Image (cartoon, rainbow, N blue to C red; front, side):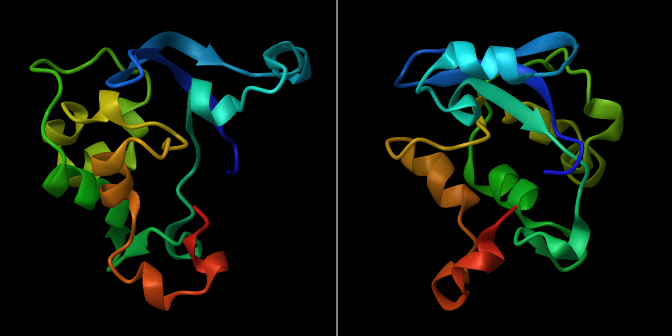
Length: 137
């Protein structure tokens, strides 16, 4: 993702992972990646990037289809707004309002196979009809 940066770390449990939001922007450099060894950084960190609009496979009808599906398909996991450093520039928040923030702590950059509800929400309804390259984003 263009200009991606870390704004959270995956915490919680394997069954119910939750994002621990960072107070400040963090850059994950080569030395941090090297220390992770074989661990995939997208399973450990929550990333944010600049919205690519129609260049993204999740963009649908002039909005982020992913944020819309998360709001519709996932239940809130917190009852107060998380302390989030990107809310002022977050496309999901701009389009979906505070309700998306109550669901956000369960969203991971890369969704593990056992997270079936989140995996279903992340999947575009027309995914079976798209070439694999269209799903990047």
